[in-house]
Image (cartoon, rainbow, N blue to C red):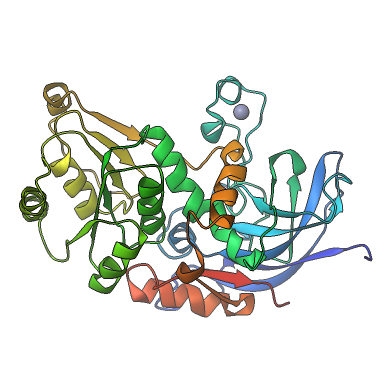
Length: 367
Ligand SMILES: [Zn+2]
Ligand SMILES: [Zn+2]
């Protein structure tokens, strides 16, 4: 292969002419030089990059990226190493969403996913991100892909975030065989994988909560035992529905539930707090900007916990990718690929669509 001199990319830049949907930013085609690769670095030719709700948040909702625009968004990446580290040359990889420093105390104590000096492609990794032809990466963090049989490499991009983040959430919750689980936002891009992990890790009961009835119905094929439509309902009413459904199935609704809040929405967070009860664990996976009042002493009375979870440890990725390749975690019917040149209309469509799209959209470079 000849040497690669430029990275072709779609960059988020300050807009010259703001329109009604995009107030301040625009997506534009730009070439940038391939940086000089140091020892231990690899250049990954991107096979696919998933569009995450976080990208839509950066682009439309004023959530700032740590590296200021111009920046290439995109953090859900799979590809092939085409230059740099000879040990990795030619290998297919999934790129973790987090690049820890590997030197600090948090890194050394097994909390590298929350390393304070971490870099994230498409956020805090200089200009570099996934909506591009290539990305330079420290090879030590890359996850090798084994025999992927009929699974397209581009599809494995979802492993990086949509599948990995729920796995880390399950680890945070110490999810184990026999657990009772509630997934709030099971209809979202990450929620359906949260449900799959819960079932795969041995949860006895998985309850899915969401607003899209068609997606709730299909969630029953992905590990959800029963689903509750929360559309237009206050959290107190969702709780009532939950109690009724549990009692019908002779499951106690009041204790031992592990609740995963995936949406970051006010309604989702209020529902999570409403359902948190005796010996329960609430894991906050979704990000939102609402402030929800809560009677904190309930945690004492309930002997319950609230935990946050951030990204996923790169160490978990080989296991995660193997579970996908073995079919334990199903992705093929949950992803859709599009050419990367459709990035602007795809962003707009997701924004205008309100909720998450029918399938996780993966953009495939077509420069
Ligand atoms: Zn994401
Ligand atoms: Zn660190």
